[in-house]
Length: 91
Image 1 (tube, rainbow, N blue to C red):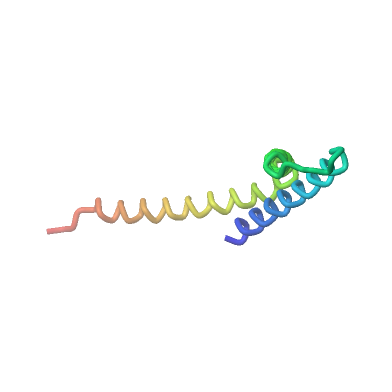
Image 2 (cartoon, helix red, strand yellow):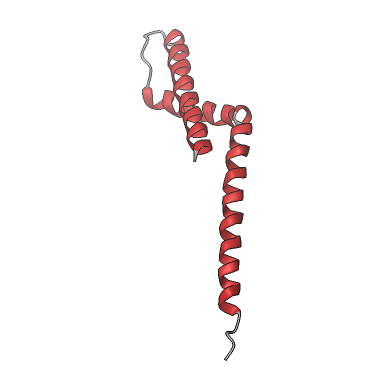
């Protein structure tokens, strides 16, 4: 679970940072200083999504490895329980 929280926290930090940079640049570029928040948020989502794909790859892989290991353990336990059921009891 630790990997999930670290990855999610980093994604949120990247989103907030991208939003702040987008609003700041738009505010400097806009002649009247008005920034449409919805468009700034959409741009921030796109920028942070692309940036996280490249920058957070090690964290994402670590999280995926943990999920895969957990799924393998669960599958092995399930197969073990299933094989116990399949064994016929002597009469």
